[in-house]
Amino acid sequence: MTTDLRDRPFPVARKARPISWLFLGVLAIASLIALDALARRGAERWALSQVRLNAEAAVGLRVAMLRSEIEKQRTLPLVLAEDPGVRAALERPEEARLLSLDARLEALAEATRAGAIYLLDTRGMTIAASNYRSDESFVGSDYSFRPYFQTAMTDGHTEHFAFGTVSLRPGLYMSRRLEGNTGPLGVIVVKAEFGQVQDEWRRFVEPTFATDERGIVLVSSEAAWRFRATVPVPEHQRAEIRTSLQFGDAPLDILPIRPVQVPPETVVVDAPQALAGQTFVEVEAPVPTTGWTLHMLAPTAPSLPLATTAARSLALLFAVAGFGSLGFWLARRRRLEEEREQEAAARRELEARVAERTAELSDANDLLRGEMEERQRTQAEVTELQDELVQASKLTVLGQIAASVAHEVNQPVAAIRTYAENTKLFLDRGDQDAARQNLAIIGNLTDRVGSITGELRAFARKSPAEVSRVSLRAVIDGAGLLVGHRLRQQDIALEEELGAEDLTVLAAPVRLEQVFVNLLQNAAEALGDREGGRIRIAARADAERVIITVSDNGPGLPQEVRKALFMPFVTTKSAGLGLGLVISRDIITEFGGTFSADEGEGAIFTITLPRA
Ligand code: ADP
Image 1: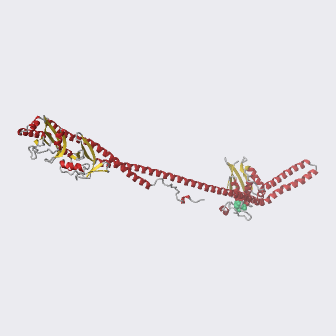
Image 2 (image 1 turned 90 degrees about the vertical axis):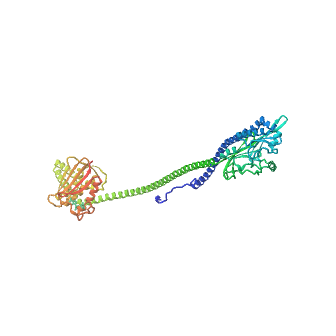
Image 3 (image 1 turned 30 degrees about the horizontal axis):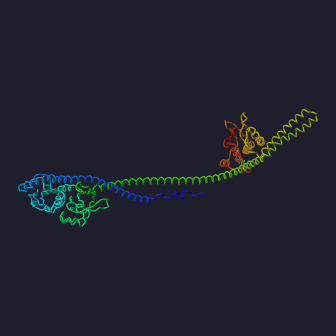
């Protein structure tokens, strides 16, 4: 039952953890990966949409550039078809006129940046050309096989993109028939070349190209892409193009541009080398009035990697902050939980200890109560034993004083006898007064005997220890009555200085009398037959106590007695018990007083008693 709790391990009840750190770690990593992917995809989408948005704006600009170039050139055949000089040259092709037309066309081509301007007669023969001075002059060349001539002759006008058979430069041939009074006069042709446009496109980072209705690249910032196709060209079309020499002997291969999935909706370019490996967003826009489509490849770099890096960093930052806070919060919650558990455990332990201590205390209390009862019993036994002892000691004294008391009684009895005989004589003589007087004396003497025997009886009786208010003088008188005869026998003077006042003390009367009897007896024994023996009893009082001294002029306390004063059975007398002083002191102590011995002329005993 009294196992020491401190020896036990501290009983902290650890609950199963609701979330393990390992699980949290896995969760954190998984969330991090998911968040990263999400951030990357989001950023990718956003960046691509931005690239596309910018590209769409830019492509509009490119279309405008191309269109303005075409439109500018397109007005030339229209104007020249109505020009009287041109018409005159067809109607009357004289050398001088033709030469002057050549010069005009040359100037015009230069001013409008047209590739070439030339005039064909109804047979398709070139009669005047802006490049009349160059090595590749068209003058005299037969272009009757060219679709732009044939169609113009039949339909009035046409536009035809083709590879130049002489210049070997591609261009857009715009032709218009000239009408005479009697029928067609010939065809004026303006060739628009796009070298400058292409040069301008090349200055931008976005590769740009224009395709015709069949998807064949006509104009391109990348020279290698020219006459390649965005979609496969059907075989019959291919043959047709070959024979017409529209694009020379170009193989009409597919463009080296492939759509890819990552990043979504983008394309990569395999050639040329400078562009290989890059990803682009491809935007298209129709080129109005031509049937062409303009394509522009907007590079995804650097917007895409920048945006994704920024987004991923931000996501990582958020994730770290989020998980950091979560971790901190969880750790804090766990710490609080542990503290709570520890507190609860400590409380439980405290309660257990309190309960245990309470049980121990209650046991100790029971034990104490038992001991107390035992002690009370022992005390009762001791008291009883002490009473017995007091009685025994008293009986010893009684034995010692019996003879003297008997003698004390004898005297009045003898006197009574004498008075009785005298009374008889007085009666015989008829002296009634004297007889009555004697009878009164006899009565008094009988009272005296009665009082002595009464005192003796009272003294001999087992006296109760109950304390009451007692007259000191009465007690000393009682003791005197018992010891008086002996004192007188030994011729010891008993001096009493009790003061005028009748001092009263709190004591049991017979027991207190026993103390005085003891002291008087001892003094008488110490004095023996010493000449002028004297015993003095003096009393005085203060507010609370009465101080009584009993002194004699005997030899004083012997050395061996003084050394072991108040020790039972210490006596110098052959018939003594050595209990008188011990019991006297016990009696006085019982009343709440003190009892001490001193050395003076003889022995001095001082008693203090509570004043009543
Ligand atoms: P007892 O009288 O049986 O010896 P007490 O306790 O009364 O026992 O006394 C113890 C001893 O103290 C006595 O033997 C005696 O030697 C000494 N004593 C007591 N009273 C006196 C006295 N008044 N004068 C000298 N000695 C005394």
